[in-house]
Length: 59
Image (cartoon, rainbow, N blue to C red):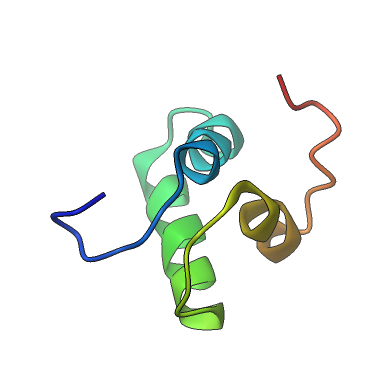
C-alpha cells in the first residue's frame, strides 16, 4: 500500500479484509489500531494479535 504510506504485507491486508467482513469502517479501525501500536510493517500476525483474534479460521 504505497499511496497510504502504510507498510502492509499482502497477508496482512488479506487478514484485515477477512476480519472486517466487507465493513470498511471496521477495516479502517483495524488498520489504525495496528498502525498506532506498531510503526513497522503491518503483518498478518500483527493483525490477529492486535484484534485479539486467534486466526483459527484462516484460509
